[in-house]
Image (tube, rainbow, N blue to C red; front, top):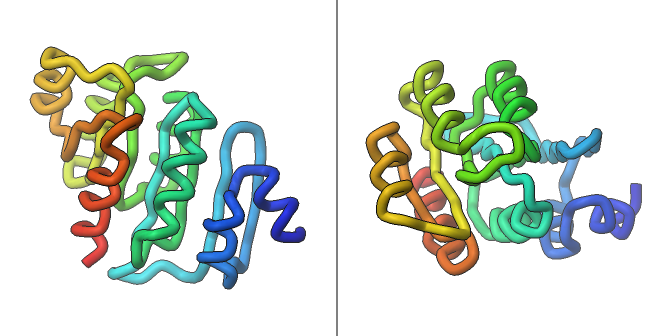
Length: 162
C-alpha cells in the first residue's frame, strides 16, 4: 500500500510520514489499526472511541506528535470498542461522551469496572458541569472539549508516555 492510499483511508500524510517504519496496516469497517513495532513498557497503545470521523482523524494526526505512542486503534461505537478493548486492553482510551449506541458515561463505567487502572480521557464537543461531575465520579482520568482542548489531551498523554 502506498503512502497516498494509506492517507486516503484514514491516516494523514503527516501521521504516515511520522511513522514511516510501519510494519503492519489493516482497515476493516470503522476501525483502523496501525502497528509500528512491538510494544514494550514505554511504548503506549491508545484507543479512540468517536463516531465522528473528522474528530477521530484530528486526534489520530495529533497523536503522531506524542513520543512512545506506537499503536492507535479506533472504533466508531461503544459495542465495537468494548469488544476490542476486552481482547487487547490499551494503555489509554480517548472516549467521546456521545456515541450512537450508548452514552460515553455508560461505557466509562463498564471499562472502569473491568480495567480499574486504565487511563480514560473523556472528550466532548458540549462540555457541561453535570457531565464533568458524572465522568469524574465514574473515574475519568481527564475531561476535555475535543474542539478546543486537543492540545491539553496531547499534554495529558505525553505525561503518560514519560
